[in-house]
Image (cartoon, rainbow, N blue to C red; front, side, top):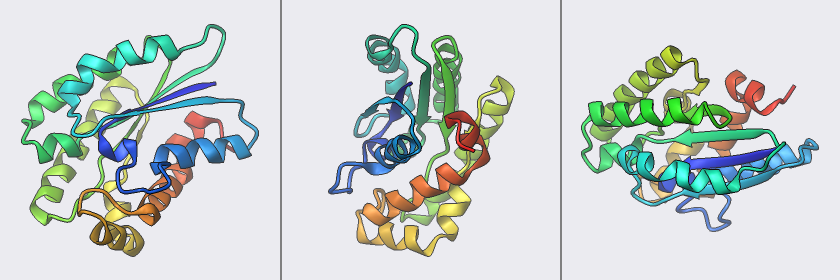
Length: 192
């Protein structure tokens, strides 16, 4: 199985000195469950959905292996809000990305996470709801993370200990654990 993780600095794992972020933890867990996999973290700092739309396919195609199951995991939205990208532009790019990605393999969208700024978090939450609706329309599994991370004292503390956008290592661990416990991700990754 080949897994490509695409997104912004939160996918990249900025603020996690181990360099694992949530994608590395998910791939590690899959490997301990016996999955034969090759995983690529293709997160890029400040990469908005509009920018991701221009790059993801060029980066995915050389990493795909003939005869191997392909899984494409996306996480976007926070960089868009932090860089004042209009929500309609984010959604248009997201629709293009997800529609094209479905032609290459199975696709999963992880919703955007909260940040330390309450107003920005509100905007991100609104965007997350719209991304979830888009995923329903496109028949793409979606893992909402906004509410669970807002309710997680561990994640909130990790955000406060980080730079208020990127959590520390414990926040990434909490996020990965939430994703792995969600039904859409369990089905997507073939976990029982």
